[in-house]
Picture (cartoon, rainbow, N blue to C red):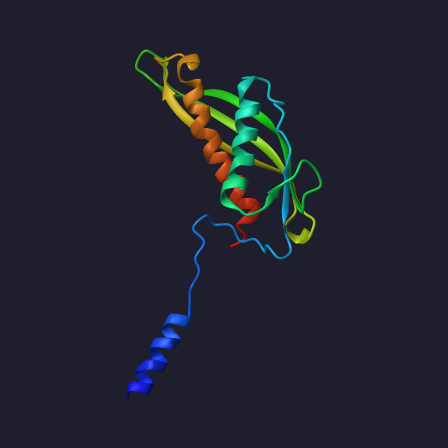
Length: 166
């Protein structure tokens, strides 16, 4: 009985289960580097700080949530694209026929290249996210806060599409 208990104890302590809570499923034996290009703004409406904020958050996500080394060009994984939309649309109309809510939508077009496993490549895939805000507030008063939330969502969508193959 003691031998059986000892064997079970050894088996239980020698087996480990590993979970990744960031969602990344990367074969680090094969893929070691990533290059993320800056995303220029190609939208009709332009908010200049958006390019830097978005590009930095995207690069930061890969740096924080993976063990990949960030390189300027020719990474094993390559992410590039452009910001194609920065749009304001009225959402709710009050009794006076004026909008009571406005939606800020940001769209990005992304190309992803996996040099080690091209089956995961995609070209010009569009990702969009939005936030609504009260129309009694000026866009200039809420713009930075909205961009922060929207870019976080976009980065998560792109991260999951590129390295979370589950």
